[in-house]
Image 1: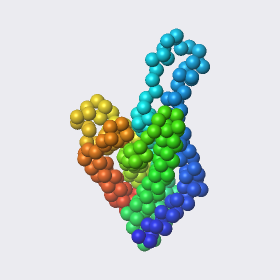
Image 2 (image 1 turned 90 degrees about the vertical axis):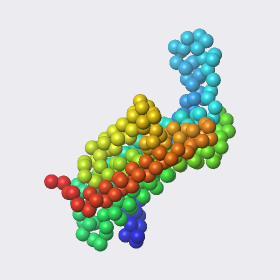
Image 3 (image 1 turned 90 degrees about the horizontal axis):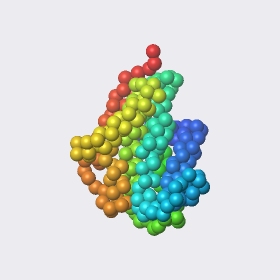
Image 4 (image 1 turned 120 degrees about the vertical axis):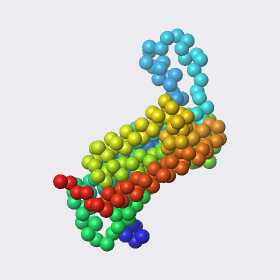
Length: 256
């Protein structure tokens, strides 16, 4: 446990030195506040463009606050995932190719402690970034559109955070034996494949972690967001990724 704590502090220090603790939360905040701002000022934006046919905006209605907040969280399913994958792709791969991992493994430190420390550091970054982004989105939504239940906002953000945690865990697994860009690409491809399967065959893929995004929106819009399958499969995927990364780290796969 002590070695895990030391490695966790090392990871957090590296994140601070590389400014990940700054630019990733800033990106999430911008993504979060863009949705309520764009939704509220869309008529003015279209009018300023000068190419809007007469009468087109007369029937425009601003969605309610819950829908806008759900859309704001949905923004993290594309750019947010990309940012997280790029930010975590060097987690193990970078140390493998620099030789740092080999130096750590000669000490009395288990591979599982290394993986858990790195995963926990990425989880901390996710909580900070998503928490600030969701708070910014909820604040502007309340100011511009309508009131929200902050309890539902926290619950929905937590559910969506579990979906984002899956891409971090997958990136960590692939970075244990592949180059950083390939690890990020495969993790994103895995998440995109599950999302595509859910959109094309919802009855077959509604148990996958991809269903968490819909459950997150359901908490805000309908007040309901519980279905065992997505939560269970997400937990299993994360555990498989951590176990796989630990086993691959134990083998100490260094570059040729």
